[in-house]
Amino acid sequence: MSDSEEHHFESKADAGASKTYPQQAGAIRKSGYIVIKNRPCKVVDVSTSKTGKHGHAKCHFVGIDIFNGKKLEDIVPSSHNCDVPHVERTEYQLIDISEDGYVSLLTESGNTKDDLKLPTDENLQAQIKSGYDDGKDLILTVMSAMGEEQICALKEIGGKN
Image (cartoon, rainbow, N blue to C red; front, side):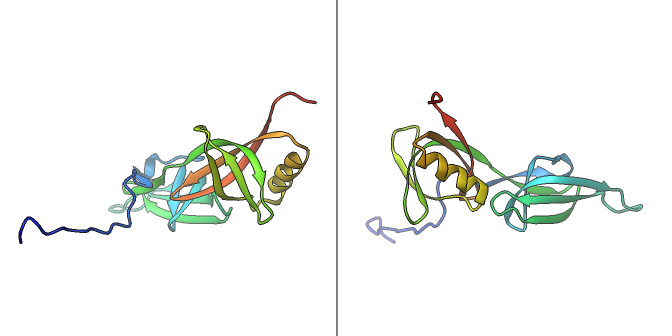
């Protein structure tokens, strides 16, 4: 091989940090986060069972998927590591709602973010639409984990008219 050859590498991975980090199953508590069946979940119940003479203590996790609300369960030996998702909440100001259900949000740096749809939660969706129609300034909280993002909360800013 000569030095004049060029090598092109195609990488599907992003250069950022990992989407999850390992944590010992016995250290994960209720209201923490865990990955069950490749989905980020909020832990709603943890029970630990002691097993026989040579077995491992096992942790039984019940979690609710943070994006679609489905209930998932998993049983893991307490000494083993589980994946825990990096869950981040970011607040954006609502600028516009398009006809196809996408929202236009203002970021901290002053740019716009136009790739999010209105939430599937009917109640939250109605609150956002009615607040926007009334001309209120709304701050939307966007939760992101494992490459997915979803609007999870809203608050009104500014004085009451």
